[in-house]
Length: 313
Ligand SMILES: [Fe+2]
Ligand SMILES: [Fe+2]
Image 1 (cartoon, rainbow, N blue to C red):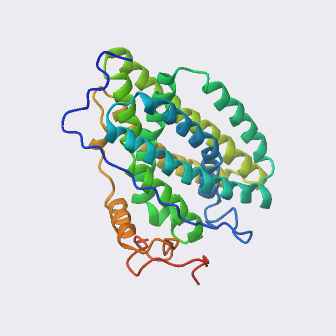
Image 2 (cartoon, rainbow, N blue to C red):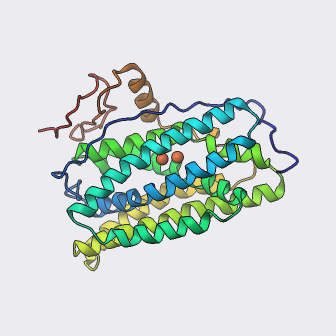
């Protein structure tokens, strides 16, 4: 542990995430091409979803191992809430991924086997390397949230609300717990030069690793659907990937600066509205977005939609 460790950054409020177990449902009538006019974006999201039940349990195990060394009770509490949120995320993704494999893409199981082996190898690395990976991946999620939320009409307009609502819930909670892995890393390793350099490597390691396995996922999906070798599909995919890179890169670059603090990354207003809307709404429903509305507003203005989940007409 660094000599600077366990020194809370001055004036940094510890934000406590709120775990929400939302009963998203992924029945057999849900198409893996849940945005019918954009199979490439559907595949990108499905590919990223494939990674979550391998990545997020790894994040949880890493956080669980780190927390006994955290002396600040508020930071430790936020770490436990982080773990509960990530547990809800990967459990929902696992159910969604089972549908993908069952309904159309059994070959995704091969990529899952590779991820099992990859995270088993990563588990043997030092706790500092794993916490840096965790904080680095979390830095990337803020750029993804910005992209998905600011361009929600383009990306989710007309999509099956069951998937759109599930994905945006996940990224709302990623914004809510944006400081946690950073705070735990800082509490254990401080901000000395070697800690900083390890953190920079973690930003690249965590984000590129997840991007690699996501890419393998969407490539397998697009190959299965006979789109991978079609020029028009590649151009649409390149357009979506360009949007991803344009929005995520600045977040990764800022995360690699000395003194970076995720608190300096403001949440999109839509995210804060979602969090406030959920806090004021009954807690036993599924917050379904109106993906046909031109603004895709937060789904709480008229209360939560109730299970069983149904598609809007
Ligand atoms: Fe997550
Ligand atoms: Fe996260």
